[in-house]
Length: 185
Image 1 (cartoon, helix red, strand yellow):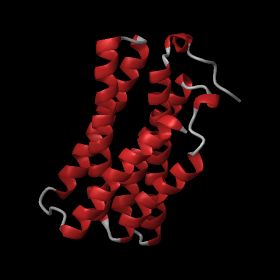
Image 2 (tube, helix red, strand yellow):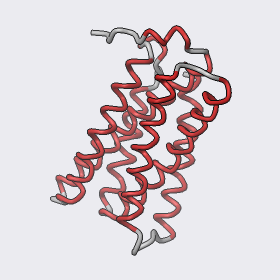
Image 3 (tube, rainbow, N blue to C red):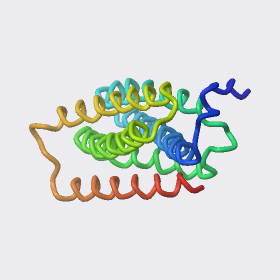
Image 4 (tube, helix red, strand yellow):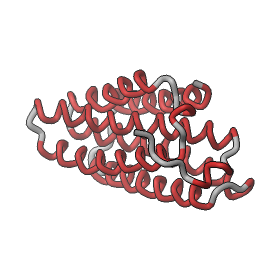
């Protein structure tokens, strides 16, 4: 069943639709990142990671639902299957190596997402758009900043080594590529 469309959707420009498509793809990927973490953390009986991931998963599911209220299904990315798989692997792979790897990965992802949302907020503040959408983007950004800061705090006393730093760089590049593709497809 499709959700009732938000009345402000009539104000969405093609640019905002592309951005919302990338947000939808990103929030879909985020849900699967935490599902990947949970799967592996449960296998390794790492309750700390399970609790962390379940808490963040709830927020990402809320974000996904909110974005879906703004974006008609016909405007969503046609690559949701690959975004789900990429998200799951982005969570599961570092979970194989423990909490520090997960927290560093989340910090990298959320650093990218914070910038991505800020670009959209800046655009809307300069060009205009639905105030309700601007509020939604600001809310999601604040949540993502909190996730980033929490993850950074959890690894603060033990910074990532070279291999983990390289992984985080790959995650950031992958996130940028995913946004670029999601805007188009």
